[in-house]
Length: 542
Image 1 (cartoon, rainbow, N blue to C red):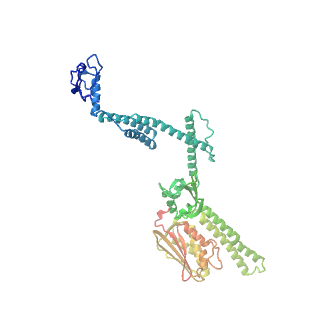
Image 2: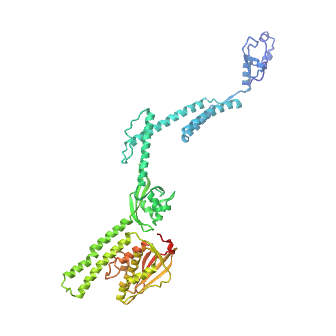
Image 3: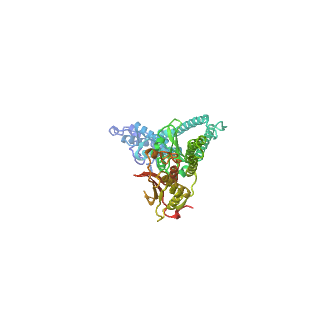
């Protein structure tokens, strides 16, 4: 309401003058006349904002100011029903949106801010703009929404936790971890629920600790990987096996690439367990076994992959198979032949009889010696030192000189100029060279020549020493080449020898980081032995 000024702003007329007709009727025509007492002591009088120095304004004059305000269209304006509805619902919508994304304490702060903001906006609109917005509906909605939502949230959380704890109590676990039921819970409903939840959390922590300890204590390298191949968990043996290849963010592809196995997904492309052997770059044999991991609803969530080093197991299996073959066939055959000769009618004074007995006995001894040497080369630790492979080749030739002289065979060895240093076991390397030379003497013609050469060079980026031994024999057939370097795989038609010499050569060469191969020529057979070259004797380990 606009008070317009001090008391006396409106025109006043004495009521007696109007009643006596002293006021012309034309003066009062089309005017609104208010009748009231204005004399001091007779009427109601009030203090107003427009009255200076504490003067009082009569009630009829206040009514006149109110009427004038209404006629002039002034005073506060009330929002429409639609505007009031929108402004009342807007704070409530903001609070409900905060319930979905904010924490409980933050929601409480938001509710208080919205209530204060609603009251402040209503006051500012009334005082500054003359616009009246009733804040009661918005404030009531905000005041009721927070406790209702909090109650509903607590009720849902309580029901969910109660159901989950009961389900967890009913599930039987084969693991040696603490059980939930029965629990002696005291207090009100919330306290009992909190205690049950505390017990459930303890069980889950015990389960997590049990699984971590179980994974860490596994004797084989084991990882847990996600379906996309990213490694989630790994025990210490995986780090020992792969070293720097197992870093943060490593994937199964990186581990299998380090093992030289690019087709690693074949272990994971099936839901059932899969296992197979692969050979690592260092010559070790790894047994790869995988098992899928599923959630309770059957969804695949990852794989467990185990890398078991079965090198010794495979070597023991091969040795057992070789021993069985040696005892059941190779050593049995000459012994049976000796018994047949002894039971026969041939005169024992016949020189041929004695020679055949001697040959069969020597064959038996060669088989036993070859098998023992092969077993040692495959499984025993090596005593390594730096040595000159040229000197070993000369020693091997000197050792076999009596056999070569007996057959009239000349062994041509390379000149001793320059050193060709390698690192390895002297006894095994010497016997390896003797086996190659003995093989050349055995299958070369009498009166022929066995040629040995020794060179140093590069194979890729590695420095190597290359030993070449050639004979002048008939060479090897396709069938003999297929069985070459295999235990008991004879390389000739009449099965001379034990069939273990070249298998020993291959085993020793590979365990020293080298290799041996056969190269056919126009005349005879050539074996090429390659070993890593050591450039400085100081590089050898003690």
